[in-house]
Length: 300
Ligand code: CP
Image 1 (cartoon, rainbow, N blue to C red):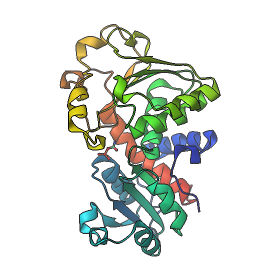
Image 2 (tube, helix red, strand yellow; image 1 turned 45 degrees about the vertical axis):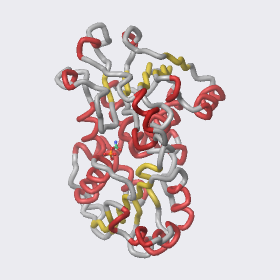
Image 3 (cartoon, helix red, strand yellow; image 1 turned 60 degrees about the vertical axis):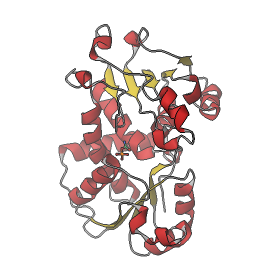
Image 4 (tube, protein in one colour; image 1 turned 135 degrees about the vertical axis):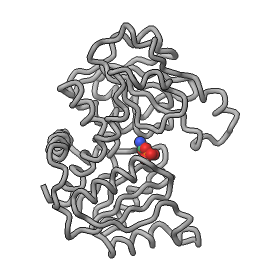
């Protein structure tokens, strides 16, 4: 069975196929392809968009959902292992969607499960379904995925969405600009990944004067829940705040993306700017997740 644990589990052709299918589902969102399918939705960590857009996608495809929305309501709270939970749940359902705070948990689950596992975020590691909806959003707004100038801003250390996005976009000849405080820099493993492919990237501490050339400005939240030391979080929590006045000299095609939730990093005065795309991006999550599930289950 084919799981989606890391974005590298999907080839460039498969990514493009998801983008194409997402557009098809957006045009025709009520296709009852999953009417004989049960999906387990296992959220060991909080979520609004990922969980609800998966649930919407399952409902629109005519499937049914079982699961839990936090580990305290499951037998994990009594000490049951992930191994036992997954082995059992994979006998109840045709597909497992799982979010878990531990890096590597989704890979582990995919190895013990008899049905495909979709990683809905594993700690600070990967968030591949977010990446596929991001790529659908980029394609919709730019008309291409190729040769784009992408600015990744904020928490590049713990931000699993930027890790997955970097890996996927690296197949489309991007230029990356990384903007983060020193303590939240893009981890070396991802920079090495780009070095090996000969992809250009630049690191900056500030972005105010340099966003004029951006096609995509991808803002991220500083992830309080990943810090072991609250004092370190306090030092960087409001380090970047995008305001509407900063967008005056930016390109017409620029779109501002954010996986959400935001805290303070995008001022609400940006929301009415036509370059703000984060709420449409969240809607695209429904169509991208319909495409992912239909593809993994061999229904499209
Ligand atoms: N973008 C995202 O993963 O949001 P949630 O944590 O609300 O699912």
